[in-house]
Length: 328
Length: 268
Image (cartoon, rainbow over all chains, first blue to last red; front, top):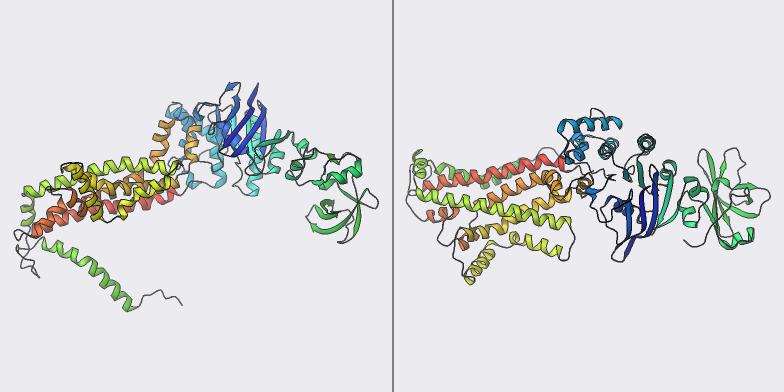
């Protein structure tokens, strides 16, 4: 049975179609990422699952139960908020035990459970502190423990790593992934960071303008984008315009090719002028002009480097040039 | 270059300013102990404690004090209920006319008391409402609501909206959320607002003169007493009491708000 399922769900705010006819199925135990630029409808989708928004039309079910009209407090899902939303008047242990207190558990039992949850996020012994005395990363862990202690069937995470610095973020990515594997709970994760989505999720849904553009495994999204938007948004693929592709392959449709798959060769199907070089450490990024279309190539450090202004030929392996549908 | 030490002239000016502000209050305290009862004579010919006993035995003082306390208490309770509800509505939801309502609520405190007083008085006479404790309460509530509203609105703005969502996400319904999250977060703001409202009501004169009729609150009683030449120091004793009763809540409010800054600032 799917953990979460959307059937043609829309949420309109007046004229604005925040979510516009989205259908999706998230199987139990999956780590599902919703990826998209801000305003693409991914957060509204999450809020629809949590119950903070009601759909304008369509059906939402959680483990088979129709929930469109259920308030948040009657759903077996819990949320880790972007700003953590820890209760400032409660200390850490009472924050974590809040859900259990509401559920009517006694003080001793709920504090024991909360302490266990805190240990799971490696914050054992922090119970008596106030949220204001914690660092950003620690608050994030408390928010996680506060949600997980209720044993939700689905955990919703709204850009939970956005406020952390790079190093902490990478560490938390590992930990979240580990927790999800260990607990087997369905995670629905909203992010605008494509690297985060690709590295953590089992499946990624790419959102744009209230619709899902493509759903698939990270490899599919990365190497086989179906439309130029996905190719461009997920890791800045080169998008070749349809007329150019028609000349190369005979098919009139846009195509994507990853920068790291572009080789500079003596002979090749495309001629390009080198417009810039930048050193990135592991590789060198070459910006190219192909008959007015901007392309980039990532060259390994041992490859021969061209000079700016030089005309080069571009080559790639069969299958690296990925044909897409036109349009968005 | 910035100098850490103020010049002598500036120090003298500051001292003179402070004296000008506070010496009259000190004089009122001193005259509460004078032996001269008809005119205020400097220096006092002698010091005595008898006026405290005299004041204690004056039924009109007790009556006025009773009315003042009653009016201030009821006004404060009304202000707490209306002010916090109004603040919640204005800061939590968006609706047509929200800004207008916010302005209308704050207006009474910007309006001169005379205008509020005359407006209320003519309204009472048109509606044929006889003067009573409740007419005074109504007059005081107009500005007490503003005080509570202002305090509560500021706190609501600093309380992140996702706290309420977090509470409901964790299984709490609206009432549980109100009890466990909203009230504890705005409690100090309400206490402070209530204390200030009480102090404001307790020493209010202008609006009261228009809405009291023949009744005397403590400040009105003092005003009347000044024209009478008998037992003048009694007024000073009462003045001391009024200063203490109004100063303490204001000082308390000041310390309470100072303490909450650190707590309130941690929305994230």
